[in-house]
Image 1 (cartoon, rainbow, N blue to C red):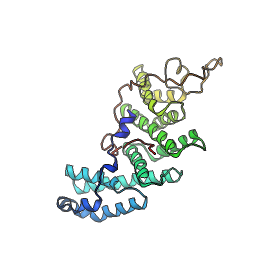
Image 2: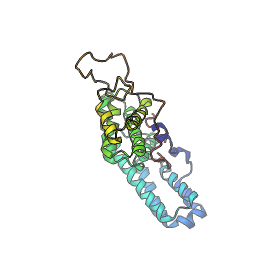
Image 3: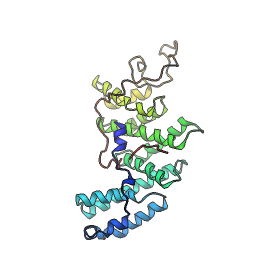
Image 4: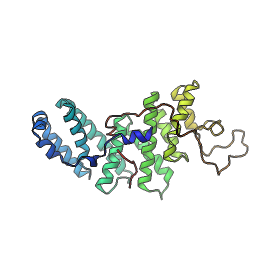
Length: 272
């Protein structure tokens, strides 16, 4: 589910040594010496962003252990740096970028995970905007980012399992963010999506229907919009009852969306 998706990435703090130490290893120097200048320039860029250079060390250590060819490592590093820049710019432009290096690194790590898994910049920023709107002017930055990341992780997991289109992933994430569900219950949307698909709906149709908050949602335990009234215009639902989109334990079947490092996908997305 979404939680496993976000936790699949090894935290950067697990890598204690710096890039210079890594490059000084004889085996590394002989294999990747031609990339040393480029790698050091990336490390300097990370420091300017107040990010730990360990973000790169995760990829470097993995490459060395697997004896990845230099050209492939170079391509991976360039891709990661592109994602890191997107994450940093998206967070900074919304005043969501943590001031402490440790917190900023964790936040960017999680965005890196999502971007590696196929979430696009537009999806990432739309989720941040939706979460900001949900939280209101008094919302805490860490909570805003955490909700956006959790919803995107759920959407990415659903997308990987059911081949959802980008618009469907975005709609699903927006629905989750705007709902009254806690982040811990976001996986219930995966169970509901699985139920609908098993009932014969196409994945994209099911996701769109869930995002609209189908008229039968509440009565059948579906993940539906929390503010819906009875379709006949009658008595609204009991406001004391929390939104209950199905069994949160049963995630249907979706697997992790992008396991790899899943960027080296990191810890609690909104950790203070």
